[in-house]
Length: 368
Image (tube, rainbow, N blue to C red; front, side, top):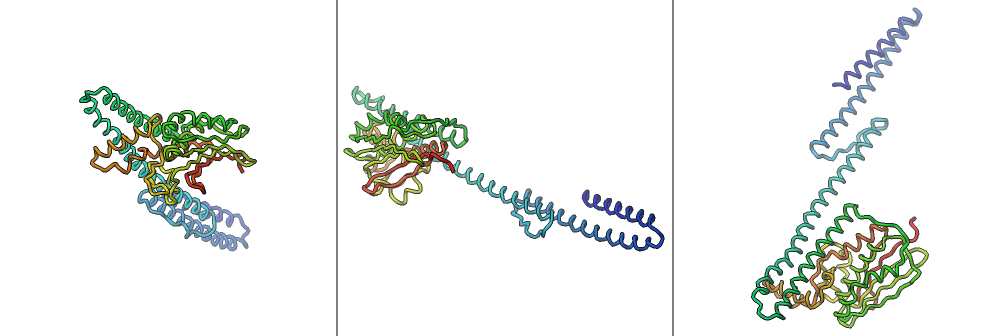
């Protein structure tokens, strides 16, 4: 009603102006001025009423969007400023609709992630609960020591999982501080593989470094080292005894790259699009179940295998096929990709022509 009252006042004002002009005009022109003014007032009133109708229709459709959640099509408006307004409103409605869908998808993904986290944490905690009576009843000192070592390993796994999830949450929230400075890639690689030396010796896996000492990139050295460590650890744990993990650093005019490859079973083609997804479990190229994440730092193959077998037996399952594989969480590669992407780099996965998996981190020299 407010806009209609405004329209009525405008029409009254125009009629008053026309009356004044007709009164002030010469006698022979009064009739012509009055007739012309009447026609102009009618045209003005018609256009104004049509605009009032269009605006009222837009207001009703916006009200339906806000209260009914309907998607409204504003394409009925023709050319003019009202059509421009309708076009902008259409863009706004489309943007709101996309935002709503994104929020719904994120809410569902969060629920799925929480369910996965709950499951991943509950498994080692169940094993710990089952191991406690064993430790209490153990009379042999060696048996007690071995059981305590397994408990420490499983607790360390839970601690590592929680720490990694917190890091991923910081990346998702944009709260991670990433420095942008010149970094020597060779130093980053040495820092990344140093904690894995003992584990590689225990697994009889060789580490080969092919480093370009002059290669540099703009990024954050600690976060990049953690990403490379997660990838190298994943490759190590899927490489059989006697195999090799190779970390190479190369640089050209376009980018600085860090490549980590192994001589393991490789990645099945159907798994390649999903290996950076959180908690994803795929199958290696030879059909063996491959979890795309390694065990916690400091856990040997023997301890991880014993833990997997004990948990599976406690659940009433046959663990014979899983003992060969480390029980991973499936978030290490996801964290690595998040850390690299936060620095403007890319992480890609593929299979070597001669077998085994290959992961390549690339930091561009120029941003076009």
